[in-house]
Length: 179
Image 1 (cartoon, rainbow, N blue to C red):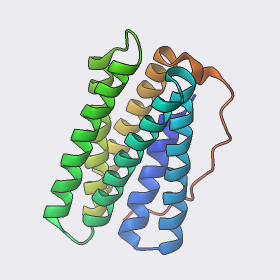
Image 2: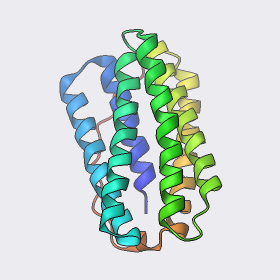
Image 3: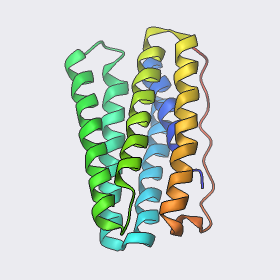
Image 4: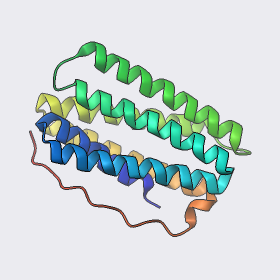
């Protein structure tokens, strides 16, 4: 199960595309993120019921929207928009952790929240680095994001056993060159 790894890959692709303002790359990355939201909702529905899958999809949609807002506002140096995106990401992580804690018996709420915090810190780091043209720091934050994604994938497998079913094929996202 590599849902989180793909989510990070697609988010990085969106960050890069937003900076370059390449509409084809923006649309390609956004479509991959939207497909991932639907996949996530379906995975959760299998473990926690259809209604909870719809809620999980909505929460992931909010997460992706906030990440998109962050990526869109950084290139134009909109500090109000960047701050709003970061606040929404944190609030959404709290809601996701609370939702899973309330929906799944014995769900390790604190561990999930800690992993989401690391996910958001890496996102903020690589998004800001890419926009600042700081390639070395960008690569370090991407490595942290990829490690965190692997940790989140392991956590998800352990705590959401339904995810062991066959997963859909991942859609590759074309990479752009460094800033």
